[in-house]
Length: 350
Image (cartoon, rainbow, N blue to C red):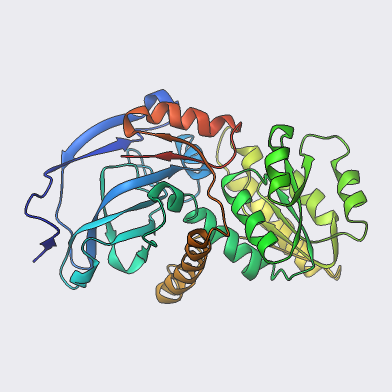
């Protein structure tokens, strides 16, 4: 038995389908019959879903663990619970929630597991909350879990203007951590307003510039660019410092599987950590632990997201929305996100 918010239940949903290896213009808009939520599931009316690096990788068939084509992209979403399946608390009906989905968010409605939901403060706009779901969880867990950063330390954040980067630098500055951030010069003024010391990531003497700002090295570096950049970042660590790798953006447009590059990265991280160099490195995986210990995985995710959403509601973290697009303009949204010319997140508003 299911319960709904009202007697007028939609029978059709609109969604964006990624049919295969296509350009943004190849994304398809389709309608299909709406299924009822199964036991333990809820039906969420989607109010916002983001365009992230993950979808850019999936479009090229280069995101690890992506499903077979065709499928509906959408790594996370914010929406209101409209219907529940058996075994779900009826109090959830009408509640605004956030959830990391990996796929399925680019739609007017989505079926998700009730156990994955996190309540969104009533004062927070749906699109604003969307900017800190995966980005906020990632930033929080890397800063406090992977790097174990502390007040008074200095960190290096590559891509400080990006979705993860701008949340990460705000969390760090709020905690009293000094931030050196790399980005295109067009974003330097905005980063200075956040308390970041910005550097041009394309500067040929970037390493020397970081060393001038942090002669003793940085206590942590957060790098999503690739193996070459990770090697440079590791060399900039202070004694006892930590490198956190969370992507390989520089390899996104290469041909073939990303597995060889990923294995090289993992091998390098293992070697760094094994050597007696008084520094360590790790690869952050958003979905790590979900299969082995789903209950613990959810606890960690919920704790991180709840804390970031609270900081957003308090005005401690500012949401950076690069642009808002309806589902019908998904091509333009994808192209803007892939241009890497904007600060913050491109958001779809079904």
